[in-house]
Image (cartoon, rainbow, N blue to C red; front, side, top):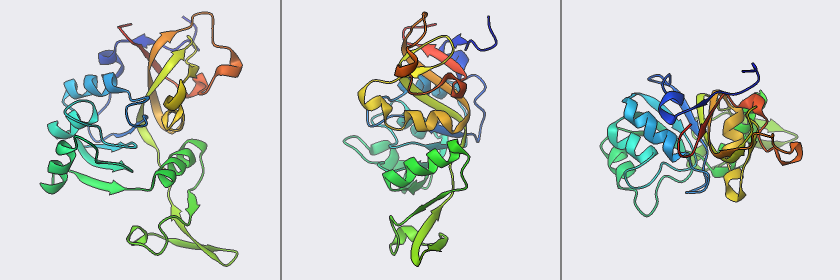
Amino acid sequence: MSALTKPVLTAKEAVSDVHDHSVLLAGGFGGAGYPLELFEALADRGVRGLTLVCLNGGQGEVGAARLIIDGAIEKLVCSYPLGPDDRAIREAVESGRLDMELMPQGTLAEAVRAGGAGLGGVLTRTGLGTVFARGREVVTVGGTDYLLEPPIRGQVAFVRAHEADRWGNLRYRFSQQNFNPLMAMAADVTIAYVDQIVHSGLDPEAVHTPGVFVDRLVVAGGA
C-alpha cells in the first residue's frame, strides 16, 4: 500500500484511539452530512470528558445525543442545540452535567476555518454589544469595534461525504458541504464516513476536501 493511500477501516477500528478529554469536531447540517455511524462507534467505547464542536447536538437518543446521555461529552460548543427531540441536551444542561457554549453559526464556521487555515482568530461584529460579548476581547480596526474569536481546532474530526478515492480526496453531495469541509481541515486526525470509494480516483475538479486533510476512511456497509 502506498504511503499516500488512506486506510479503509470499520467504524470501530477508526475511532479506537479517540481518547478521553479530546476535542471532537463533527460535520453535519441537521441530518445532512451527519457522521452518525462514527458517533455510535465512539459511544460503544465509553470515552469520557469530550468537548464536542458541531452545529447541533443531535436528536433523540442516537449519535451525539447518545454520547450526551451516556455522560461522554463534558462540553458542547454549537449554534443550534435544541430541536424537535432535544430532551437529552436539555436535561444534561439543567442537571449541570453538560457545559454548553452557544456561538452564532457564521462565527462558529469562521472560527473553525481559522483553525484549519492556521490563522490567529476571526474579527466579527456579530454579537457585539450583547451578552455574547461578555468576557471577550474587543479589537478596534479603522475606528470600528470587532469581537476577537479565537481559532478552533480539535484532536479528531468526524465528517460525512458521498465519495472518496483511495488517497482520501472527498466529494460531498448538496448540504453535506455545510461544515464538513471546515471540520476536516481543523483536526489532527480526520475520519471520513463515505458512501463509496471511487477506485479510479475522483475527478480533481470534483474534489471538495483534498486527501491531505483526511487520515482514515470508513465505508458505509463495512470496510
